[in-house]
Length: 79
Image (tube, rainbow, N blue to C red; front, side, top):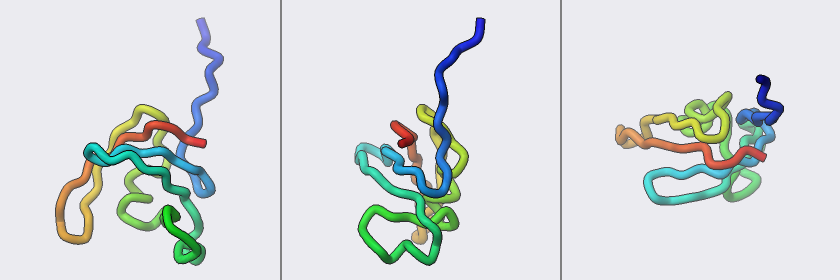
């Protein structure tokens, strides 16, 4: 039996609710040239952006922050 639920994936332009450790935040994936336009905008080329691009709700990924710490991130919602 087929599941008719449409699954959104993280793409440029997506507004994504993520959980990093215990912190929940909303980020928007924007072109690199637009990153400086406001709080909560991230580039798909940033460490976090690369870690979440192409994922869907419920997926978990990890990335290394600039200080070398491994950060786990869960996709809670893609809009």
